[in-house]
Length: 423
DNA sequence: TCTGGGGTCCTAGGACCC
DNA sequence: TCTGGGGTCCTAGGACCC
Image (cartoon, rainbow, N blue to C red; front, top):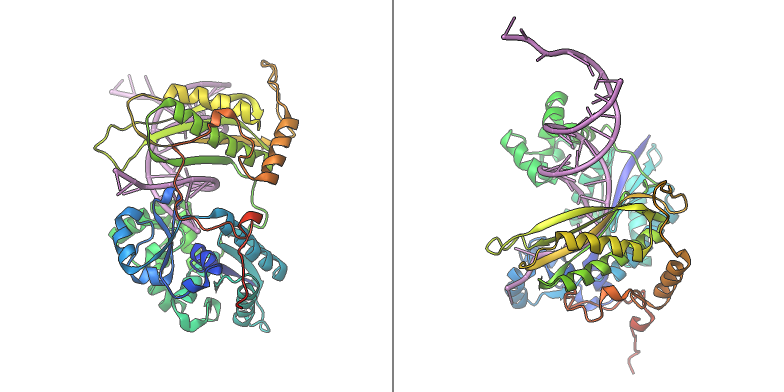
């Protein structure tokens, strides 16, 4: 028999920042989203001050100032690198690992009479803390959904030492009765409102509803969730994730952008990033969607949001071909007289780049793979954007702000932390 | 008055996750 | 003044096929 474990890095982005600023231990810290827009990670001390997840920074800045909360712009180079180090330890210690997100992984563990899963998890936790320095919580359950709940319990109650094993628990129903239905993995805000209206308030209420009702109201995904709560695994471990189906690159602008020239620069930039990711994974895209929108938070201003699908004559991962397609699309959806807040591109219909279906009717566009390979090599070696297409612009006044970003301590020679011995 | 059955594909919209 | 980004899955409805 096997069980699932969820390994979850505590307040991950904050923990990453603290690793190189240990004096921030015990102090309130938050990390902001791109463009310094929202709060997306909070230390326990910041949570205790009542700072909400996803709260707009500008609405919270008075409180943050008053309480002396330390603020960081997001630094994905740092978080990505530390994430890889945590995941590497898991993969080294455990045979069955699914990396679920930047700060979470599921494991499958054999459960037999001899195994003390709690001790095993505590050892894993200790090793991660020692070798990388990131604190994690580990929840163990018969299904992934139950492991998630166990992980919450491990995190919320320090008495457990960061590990909670729900399979060793005799009163599972009592625990499930203490979990709000909206805190169940797979039940979001909309569904929990709907369920509350139907008299379903806890994880236990959901688990006990009959299958027909669940299927009708919540579709198969909701039924699966309920079954998982009953201890019947419906979601396995996915160690080799399916190839991706899309690549998106979009950003909010520093301030509203009205000019087509600026939008064309921004879209060229986003296409370059997306195309690079495509090549990194050996893929090519047959479709490109380009979109732009004004700020939905400003209904007092004129609104315009539109997206357009541009089909490519044949799948490609060539930056210039994709830029051309995107700008053609952008020119069609752009309307003057609006202050746009965001634009982006999405690449879909992805196929392996070395097996491209040719078109019977179009001459294949000239596509210089060697140039793309050289471009990627140079940008990997000397930093992204060292070499870029002129259509992406030079000064980029629209580029997002990240005013409080910490150094890329672990991924840039120029930004290595400096250590001085006391005299 | 009475208008079939079975299937596929595509898209938009809604929901979720981190 | 200032509100993130990237991804997946499911369903309903329309268009089309024979």
